[in-house]
Each structure stands twice: as C-alpha cells, then as structure tokens.
Length: 442
Image 1 (cartoon, rainbow, N blue to C red):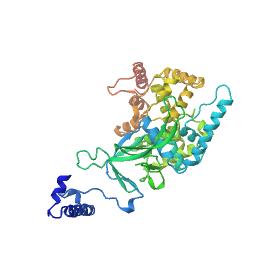
Image 2: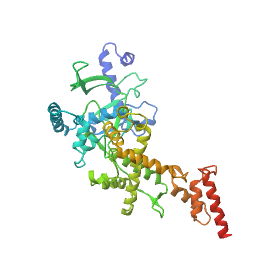
Image 3: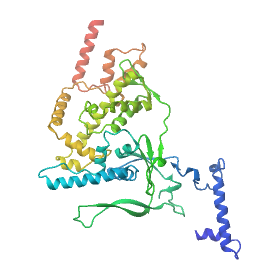
C-alpha cells in the first residue's frame, strides 16, 4: 500500500497533496468505468461495484453466479431464530411467550406428577400461528428452505459485503465485519436459567447466504432487521405445460419438472408430524387448495387434473416419511437417541414430534401391515424414476403402427437392461403368456 502511495508523489514539496489528487483521480476513473459500455472487455482493470443512493433499499447479489448451499441443522436453527427475532411483529409475541413460561413454571410448582414439556420459543410460536392466515411473519417463523444460495459479493442497505474468498490474493482486504448477535448467557456451568442478550462479534465474512422463503427471499447482513425493504419477491416466468396420456399420467419434456415440483411442495407445506392425508382437512381446511395453487404457479394445468395432482402430492409426502423412518428412525434403538440425531433438511421440533408419532402402537401396526403387503408383491417393474408411462410412450414412438399392446407394455416395464426378469419366476409367467398368444393367433 505504501509503495502505491509513494508512486503518487510527483512533487517532493507537496507530498500529501500529490497523494490526495492522484487518489481522487483514480476513484473518479473507476466510477466512470462503471458506465462505459463494454468496459470489462478493455485492457484496463475494472473498478469496484458502486452502489448508488437510489439502491439503498434493495438487496441483491453483485456477482452473477451463486452456489447452492445446504443449511445444516445448526445453521437452520440459527437463521430462523435470527430472522424471526428481528421482525417487527415479534415484540408482542415475545411478551406472550414470557407469560407462557411463567405460567408453566407456576403450574409445575403447584401440580404434582407429569406435565407437558416447556416448548422453546420457535416451536411455541409455530403452534400459536398454526391456524392464522398466511402472512410474511408466519412464513418467517415456519422457516426458509434448507437450500440457500451463497454469493461472494452482496449489496444490502447501501453496503457491499465481500467474502474472504472473494478478497483472497488481493492487497486490500474488505471482508472483515462486526455484527450484533443474540447470545444466551449463564452465571455458571450449573445455571439453567439462560438469559438472551446482544453481543458484538468481530470476524470475517465467510458466506453471503440468500434464504429462500418461496414467496420471497431474505438476506441478513450485519444484524439488519428483516422487513419489507430487505425482501426480494421472486419473479416467476411463464407457466409450463404438462402433457398427460389417456390414463392421466404425466409424460413429455416437463414431466420430470412436474414431479420434482410436487415433491418440493409436499416437503415445504406438509409437516411430517401429520398422521395421514385425511387429517389435513381437520387441521387446515384450505391446505389442499394451497397445495394446488402452488402447483399452478409453475404449471398450466386444467381443473380436472387437481385430483390426480393432490394424489401425487400425497404419495410424495408418504414417501418422504417412509424414507425418514427407514434411514433415521430405525437406525437407533431408543427414542432418546432418535431425537438427538436429527436428520438433515428436517426441523428439530418436527422431528421430535415425528419420533413420538412413529413410536405409537397405531403407527407400529400400520408399518407391520405395510411390510406384510409388500412381501406379497411379486412382479416389480424396472422403470425406476422414469415411470411406466414414459416407457410405454417410447415404445409407441418406436413401433411401426404407433400402438403398443398390453403384453408389449408389460414386457417393456418388467425387463432389465440385459433383457432378464426380476424375479426369475416372472420369466416362466412370460413364457406362458407367449404360449397362449401363439395358440390363439397361430
């Protein structure tokens, strides 16, 4: 840095004035380069991004390419608590929660025996807002998606925040910040009455994370409050068309996007704590209509497809619960160990309720009945995620007549790549089918 300043001096009599003049000229040139068309293709160095006064209320990334970042369970709890704590509507709810804690403690002293466990602030607040109308604060409390976008440079409230990686190898470092965060304090190791208070931390920006709340995106930098000025509404493009066959199954180029969106909607809007699909109507009468509206935001579907779409959402929701039970619930022998080991992409309070739900006798009997039913299944298809509908459509395109018989469809969806059958007993059945066809048509 001093070497650069020494190069600014042209008159030894006025050293400070030379440095001042040269620095102002350099800053002015970098400012003007931002408005020169195609300046990034010239042979001079491009100046830094300039944030104008009229952009102070906006929040947007300054680098075009962002990387997808999956929030860990600890990061998810931190960002959800931070965003909700600094929302304007949160003040009244914190007073109600303090009253709830005091009432719970007084009830525990007076009543003998077991009583419900005291809830943390976020789970308690989600329970209070469960039957409320949809609002920005309710979406904030429910939490963002576990998938966030990470940017190297992000502009918030008129300031540009650089990560340590973006300033790596440069002489001037501009990635250090100070921020205020809510921290729980205790008097000693035995103190159980934690007190939340603000503390100032100094460090280096490692990531600029843009949280996705589906309806809007939120970025928090340097302890700024989340409000309407800091949120960015998502811009949606034209809705996609989905092609269906005569059986009502999706086919065509948008089939994969359609099925993927169904899985995302099921994971975002239907908690794993619900028992079954009919329970949704008793908890929220408008929930199924909301699910349908979410699909319509991405795809142009006629009203007659609502029933089949909701059926697919139901299946995607059940498959997610089944995967959690097989991979995480059955992995540990006791409920205490299960609750400690929270799987990724699952909220902590939802997982604890899900463990209690799966441990009931009713759910255990359902699982046993399901295992018994799957054991009876003999002829499994081999289409994978592609599905039988897409395989049959491919057979129709390759067929000279443009049609596929029921036998050809069965063979196309139950053969492996090498032409064998799973299980081997299925091959005997296929030979019997060919024998009957030969006797009838030959």
